[in-house]
Amino acid sequence: MSRVGQGWDIHRLVEGGPLRLAGVDVPFDRSLLGHSDADVVLHALADALLGAVAAGDIGTHFPDTDPSLRGADSAVLLRQVVALLQARGHSIENVDVTVLAERPKLGPHFDRMRRRLADLLGVAVERVSLKAKSTEGLGAVGRGDAIAALAVALVS
Ligand code: MG
Picture 1 (cartoon, helix red, strand yellow):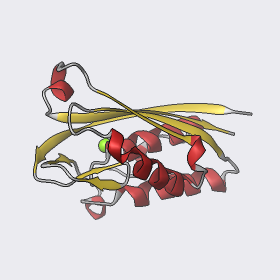
Picture 2 (tube, protein in one colour; picture 1 turned 180 degrees about the horizontal axis):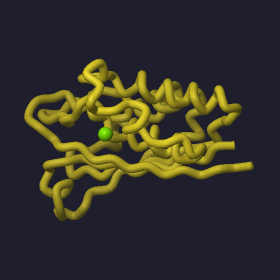
Picture 3 (cartoon, protein in one colour; picture 1 turned 30 degrees about the vertical axis):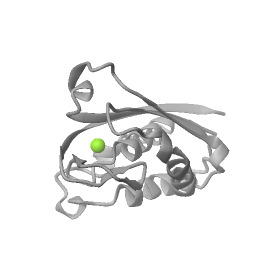
Picture 4 (cartoon, protein in one colour; picture 1 turned 90 degrees about the vertical axis):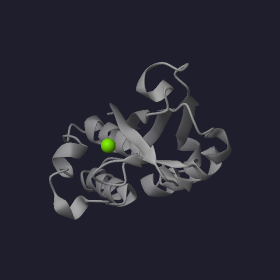
């Protein structure tokens, strides 16, 4: 049986880089603000994976009221989600992520990001898709105040 899950996340951009996205640091003069490291790509992916197996969401597993998670490396959280799926006998078929960002240009970093995501998910890089879109200047993302991410995951 195959199961699909979807996730999304958004975090506010604040002064001071680098920008942590998809588990890598991107040179930029702004970074994402959150209780953890606010990596929207990893958060959206974690929610997609948890959704695929109907195991709640990132907020139930890693509540932002937990002081031990302040500034947490989201890669550690995503690895825990992957371990949860593996413990239940699931394997990840593929994931597809769209990042919504006005700046910076992310294309030059995609190879590094995909390799990092594949490593965190324990799958071949060919199973990891990453895309970026601007929002044509519209809304919080378009103003450069936030970055959002959408993810789907297929799990068997
Ligand atoms: Mg988040």
